[in-house]
Length: 125
Image 1: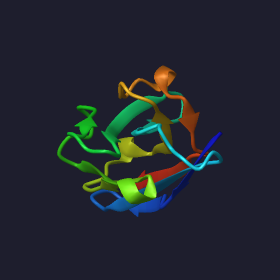
Image 2: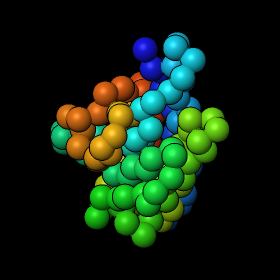
Image 3: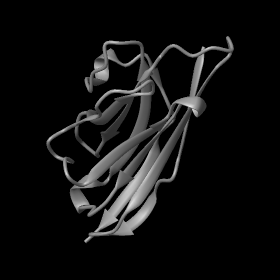
């Protein structure tokens, strides 16, 4: 069983920034789900992946809609990932989820194995 705990959501005006955090833990004392992904779901829209990274290294990957504005970083020792969101736009308003899976890593929502509870991000114009 894997637990993912997100934090850092909130409300901000367009052009502002927020930083999301996600910490993973496993009841088994080890953690092998090294692909960690941020996804979001806006009202009335399907869930979409926005950024992902392997906690053990390698290049991060982003959806086109957030490239150049969002940055994912990781802390392998803590099994944690972070999402720095800059130049936020009203269309970034959504519930943001952290998810984890074993490799291969993808942004596809249906392939993720574990999910956090989500954190709300609201961007006003």
